[in-house]
Image (cartoon, rainbow, N blue to C red; front, side, top):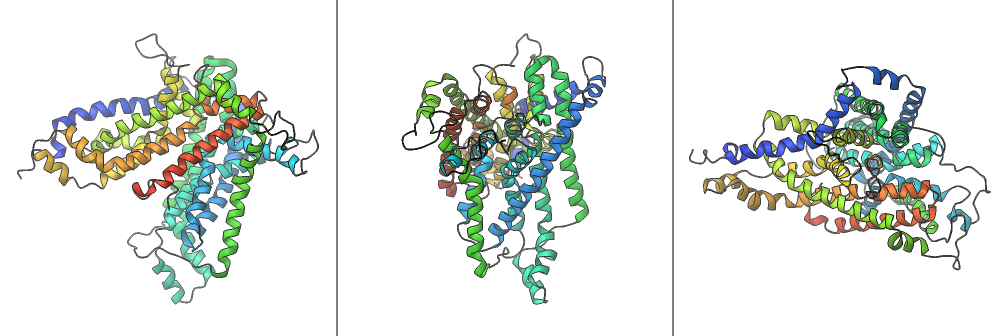
Length: 568
């Protein structure tokens, strides 16, 4: 009983820290979403449905919604086919080189979608430098095959296949080998074991991964913008972008309704997946044992060849096409030893002020977001685990919302929330700080969840012992919690940095002159016809991302297992 008085839950310091942390977190992460909802229903003008009825009855809205559903559903199907195939082979079989395969499959997800679109555009069409080099380029005047719904669907599927893979792989690792061995002992064949045991038990993870891929594809801006706008094929994110860029803040109420429409469809997709799972009744409760592992035998080498050929098709070839395009003197020229030049690289990296500024902005925003989120999430995760309350539980349930919502929805929410700061004449719209606040809201959960899991595994006895000797909360957090949670916090910071440094969907609607990010500059260069420079800048970003991922992989042994997504 002598330890009860200084227990972690009764600390006055913790009582003071709770509102100090929760209030700004709630305002930054959830305030913009609430402001968006109020704008959509006309709050402030007297609650009205005028904006809703005006926007929802337009033909352009119905067309964009239809196109968004077509591309999101089609992309999800492709993501499921790719991600599930990789997950079943990597998680359940004895193929070799699993770590390298997973790393390569993760690269497309980490590469910005506009770079993915640009790379594939350089791999096909009459102006493809790669096809000209091998004499397979179609005649001039031929259409670009990726300027089509099919092109958008294909690239959305490739971009988000990793989400399905990661989710399904985690579920497959929980299937114990004892179940399959028992089924085989009772006479069940391979097909029956697969259909009646493996597939039903992995279905919850598969559906969850498909839901994540659908929501992400629905809000993807880079690929539909690069491929859809030139073809006149609008989706909801590109329609919002065109309306806001064309008419400015005067259409904020209308684009707020469009943003709510995207959010409603995304949430409906998630709820539908949960409903299907609740009706299925699948699970592995109470099961334990050695994870399932299947031997491919003579099929192992063909399976490995097929996987690496697929990686070459979706990753290596597009990036090679992007690289060779960046080395030509002018777009449309052939590449040879005589014409190859680094002029575009030199221009982009050292001469053009907009690109060097974009590099500085993106690196600064990504670093600041990672550092600030780490500083906030460490004490917040401790409070949620050691000082649970109704407020902290409510925040824990809602904090995923800014990340789950499409990025364009969060952008509009931030514009509405920060265009006029309360009680002042100041505005953050058009400044770099609104992008930073959007990043903090967007990636908050990416940092919080790994730290939260790490704190949850800590034995509170050490903290209680320190408290009993008079150690204050700040010292306990600094000397006990921080060192133990540091690996998870570092991994979370790396993931936030990697995701934020190449982000486009959020910043596309928030940037202004002087606050450009890398994703924005690549899109603008391609849109203005500077394809060679866009390719050079895109390739430099790809090299940076792969280098950072490689450094993370090399340091994987220092991080908790499961924190790095592509870690085996």
